[in-house]
Amino acid sequence: MIITIDGPAAAGKGTLASTLSEKYHLAYFDTGMIYRAVGLEIRLSGVDVNDEQQALQIAQTMTFPRMMELAKDKRLRDSIGGEYASIVAAMTSVRAKLLKMQQDFALRPVYADGTPAKGAIYDGRDTGTVVCPHADIKFYITASPEVRAERRYKEFIAKGVDISYEQVLQDVKIRDERDSNRSSAPLKPAEDAIILDTSNLGIAEVLKKACEIIDSYQKNS
Ligand code: CDP
Image (cartoon, rainbow, N blue to C red):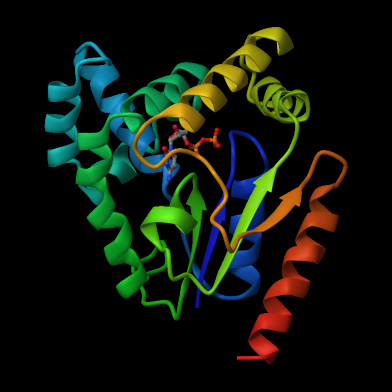
């Protein structure tokens, strides 16, 4: 079974995807990590993040082991990490280069320790529209920019990051704008996606709704 969860920054995709992957014994693929890893590699090498040729070169040499190494670096998830990821993710050549790696995972999904899984949950922006258009279930998780900024702000504060709510809100809006208006794989729900607006829903309620949909799919298939 392949499930995709797409939506804008800080909508709660990651929490939902990792909880569902444990509950239904599915591998979890955080596709944003790939763009974050390419962005961080660019940052570490001091190259201009807007230089598409250089970004493509880095994307071409990106491997899973290198991504795992970069994942240990705190800068992968800071606000510049998100900004750099969204800049490289708007480059058509970079997206094309990173697509196959994401699609191959659906053919042979594996857990974090490398053991085979019977299916996968993808989390990203275009996983239901481009990466896995034939997924069994597609969710599109969203919430107002203010609610999402509040959630991301709390995450940063919990990690000891010195940042204001206003700055986080501005970053969220800039990334929404870039993700939605890029020419390649813009952020939008797949036609057959189930849309969950989490502005007024807690994680337990979102999880309950998602589980009802998955359970009913499994019963009828
Ligand atoms: O956790 P958050 O939603 O803030 O970000 P993420 O999922 O780690 O993704 C970081 C950035 O990568 C996003 O702002 C997108 O620009 C890009 N991305 C994408 O274009 N396509 C994906 N499938 C996943 C992420």
